[in-house]
Image (cartoon, rainbow, N blue to C red; front, side, top):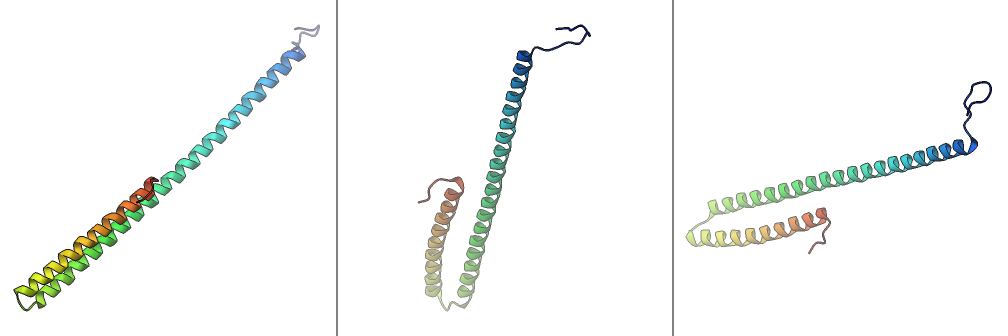
Length: 123
């Protein structure tokens, strides 16, 4: 209310109420900022983990491709030295058997890595 000098005076109870409201708003805002920062940190960590996992999967697939190509070249070199059709057939059977086993192992490893990245337990 106005005193005799024309200044407005806020009652002490009203001032205390306003200060308490401002204090509560500041506390709520600080909590919101903290939660937002934590969410941003978690998101950044998840993105970095996903990027790292994708890089690991790419490197693994590339290593498998290199091994398979190398195996194919070795097979071709052996074929070039084969003495007869029986040796070619034997080399081919060995190569196919080896490649089936290698591809099976590679598929299992890729599956384990994918499970690890997705957070599901591997087999």
